[in-house]
Length: 325
Image 1 (cartoon, helix red, strand yellow):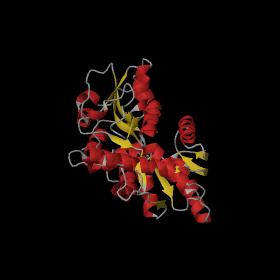
Image 2 (cartoon, rainbow, N blue to C red):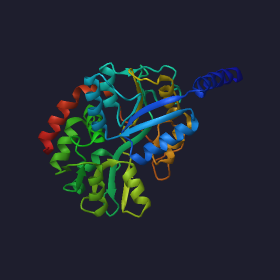
Image 3 (tube, rainbow, N blue to C red):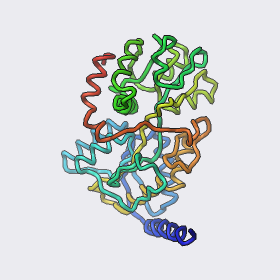
Image 4 (cartoon, rainbow, N blue to C red):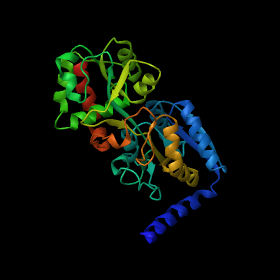
């Protein structure tokens, strides 16, 4: 056992040593909120003082459009990407835009969160589950509870036409044989309102305009901490998640610095940084922030990024036909 531990430790130290003297400039494109992006860059530069990071921030859709324009012009600028979801990364992978990083240590992580070809790596879990107003009489524990009479006319959810997290939830639920499109038809029959993004859902439930909804975890967790009458539920069937993956472009000019950035985000220090920002770390060995479901109790629904990418256009069209768009 000691020899095995020593061997693992030696590998870990060799990876750290490989990045210890990295220097140069690094260009990062990210969809993180600006404050989070600055904290990430500050922490990385503190760990790698020889690297200077220039970062550009925008929503994932905006960053992807910017990248596509740069690809078309033959002048992609970023070395590394840190954007919201695996489906966007899967698109870049299929287009041959991402560089594999086989040195990245993913041994502590759920394989389902990582690309098996090591071209992108999930850094955190921003889960989507059920929110309810604590004045509601029925307390949901399952997706199917929202199909009960008590929830009729009381459901609001973000539209996958506007929200990447909602699009991922749609892909996972419709691929689940126990839920499928029948579940969404049930929500439509319940009079569920689907419009806008997660912020609008949170406000509707917190205000009591609606009693139930689907929403990303940190909104009700932070709201509850400030006294809002809301509760976040991890349904027994499992949560869905955007995982803020990181990836290196094949056209990266600063490859050693880009690999160091990936290693930093996946390191214990990088995962603790995610928790300090108020997100669930992807590493199950790093504690979640206060107020979130215990990490040991979090189950993610099965999700196939490649299938979700293939089905996305058809899924959105079918959803719009049910709920409008």
